Length: 160
Image 1 (cartoon, rainbow, N blue to C red):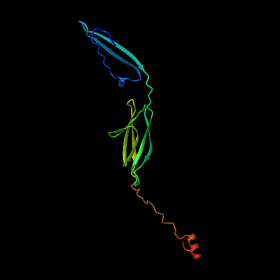
Image 2: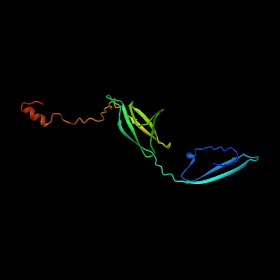
Image 3: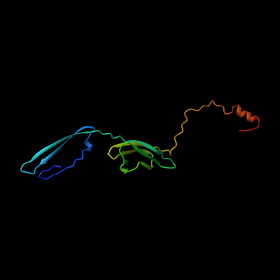
């Protein structure tokens, strides 16, 4: 607060996005027009900031791929940062990382903590409705289907 005979105007500037770990210099200008003359005053403040926040890391739990019985689903579980978290999948935001009723495809979830730090995680839901194609690369034709074991049973009147 500045005390003068003029009008005090206090403007609040949100500078948190500009502060970094280490030495920061903030300059404040006081303009006094409360008399016959205009007076200026400058205040220069040096602040040292030690930032010890942690990065957000994510883990994918309960990944279920799309198949004939159900659609895909997964859960994004964040650690680190400062909660609460906001989860964004495309343009949709929610306060938990649980996603369900998903088609096969690639999904990108952005996790944002209370300080605005973000982590982007990619998740692929596979399509297990289509069975993989069976490809026979080599056939061993040297196997004798009528080896001695089968002849033994046939000689005793038994058939396999």
